[in-house]
Length: 203
Image (tube, rainbow, N blue to C red; front, side):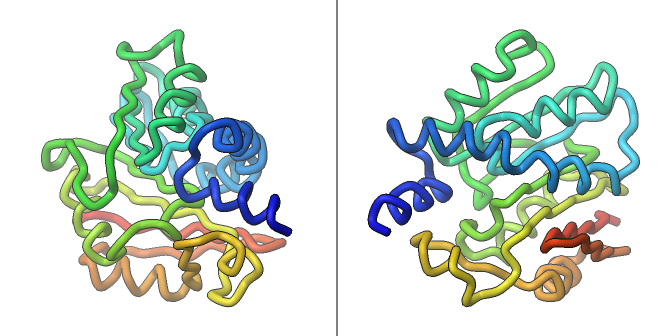
């Protein structure tokens, strides 16, 4: 149990060897949720997009595939994640893909920059989530969409017990938080076994 706890605690902020293994695991394991979640958003060519908590960088690649001549930004609090995301996107790094170390609490981007923001399996770890959601909204263009994708939906799940600093929210809680942060036209989509995508629009 000790090893599993150590390994899965890398979800929050991957570091060192175990962190690098976790990032490879995330890039593979999050694919079905991410591909389904992205299918719910009509993505256009030439968009500027941001993935918060970009982990190993696989979502950045998926966003780039869905939008010709797009610019895709990724941000993560983990130095290990940033390094992996840069490696995974090396061919287009600093041309179409831009990866930065940083937090959802204070995004280093100007107002009204992004057409789409995604957050895959990461809001569990955001401090003061309501404030973070307002910060996300700040960097979005009017009419832009924010898509949260999660699969841990119960606050007392085995995952929240195993991973330090992890808080799970129900899809309904996340939808209400988006509403409270001023997002409009919020949608809640669910798919078995436990996938949920919550989408909000900036007015």
